[in-house]
Each structure stands twice: as structure tokens, then as C-alpha cells.
Image (tube, rainbow, N blue to C red):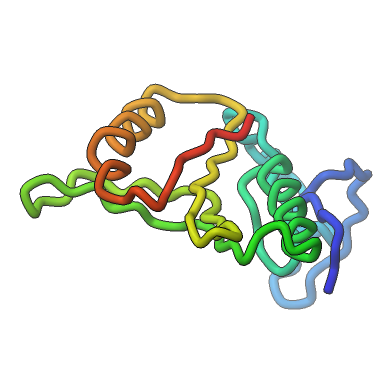
Length: 148
């Protein structure tokens, strides 16, 4: 099991192009075609990371997953899962779905919904408020945590 973070396109390198036999394009090993536009960065400057077989939206989120794995080995928690869907309903109608980054099962059997955020958008604040008002009161065994 790999226990390190692998950042996607993290290291800058000088492109060394070779000619593709099929398309006859000059292509670098990173996949960039010579003369193409540079890749756009994330609007929040988050770097996509790979950890333990999964891609995470940010380095911070991947580090938290690593921390949860360490807590699991130390038997501080029972289990954890990533990208847990919380469906917010009203009168049988779906309002929205909030995908929480991590759902952690504690030793006492209760759950913790952990959301890693570096930046809180207005849409996130609205969904968080809906979660607190419409979902959490009906699920007393869950608590919500914002990890910054």
C-alpha cells in the first residue's frame, strides 16, 4: 500500500518532445502537444493529488485521508469512507445533494461528516445551512465538521 501523496503535474519540467508515429505530432511524455495552449489551473489554486489509489480534489483533502488512515491503524476510529452523498429532501422532493468529503465511523458507533475546505463559497454556505437545518436533526447519530 502506497502511503505518499502524488501530485498531478506538480513538478515543472522542460518539455522534451518526440514525434508520435501515428499522428506525427511532437508530443512530450507528460502528454503536452507542441504548440498547444498551457493547461488552466484550478480557480482556487488547488492541486489534484493521488493517494492510496484515489484522486483527491486538493492536497489538503489527500493529507486528511492519510491522517484518517493513520487514525484507523491506531484504532482511534472504526472506519471511514470518502465522498459520502447527503440527500437533502423536503416533503419527499429532492432539494440538493451535498457530497461530503469523508464520513468517519467513531468508536461509539456515531458518525462524523468531515468536509475539508480551504475556501468557503456562497453555494457551499447555503448547502451547509440546509444540511444543518433539514438533515442533521433527523440523523442524531451524525455530526458535521468543517476542517480548515
